[in-house]
Length: 310
Image (tube, rainbow, N blue to C red):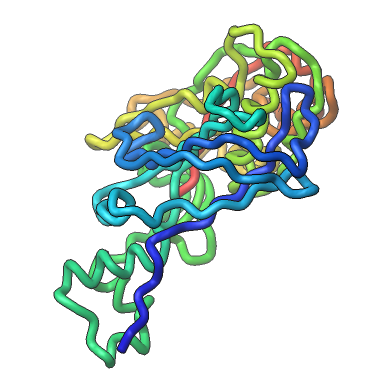
């Protein structure tokens, strides 16, 4: 006999109000949607909840557990989770965020594999992870720096060669500010590979609270980017962290050559924004002329090149 896992997945978030203060020990309103294909793709599932934050402003919920959630075919492409939050507990959702589900919930993926193969044998249960990978994806793709793949140019890979970072093949702006019109601490201080994605989400969410005058800014431009390559659209771009920008500079010549060969353009010998905040008024940038790295006023207008993770 085998126990069946409940068809749910966990989700956590820290909630702040319009004054950037933590919303603690408070019931909030949330609408959660699962989107297929892209950050603006088809809504395949929606639910609402009214959870309560803890003393640190953290809310923890479980998503799913209904027939509609059970019906999602997790093998049918990429999926994104969109959350809309009302800190007052109602349905006036003032905070919105969307991010890609980079790994399908284990039990749900296992069910998909079982459906596709007609059942899992007892001998395969002992190595279920390998079994699922073999049955759903018989080939493992490895990438190398300089390769044109995943919507852009690969400029960093991990030790497995299966995951890494991609730079867009052209700049998203010849000059744009970092902030949305109002100074304030966003706490987007992450640094290192993959950290720019969370930085970007934090910046956009914080600027809504601090003050967004409606004009373009660096993180928003990257978040809005949609790139179609090889018949597939990639919509999960973000403003690189300080370290990710450093990795791009280290591989500048390689990125430039691959970008130009695929209809894009090389970096310009000037400054580019990172998503790593330095203070309430400054953020980190890097010169693609001499590699000099410093922090500038968020009002400065400099270039932007988006990245994405795979």
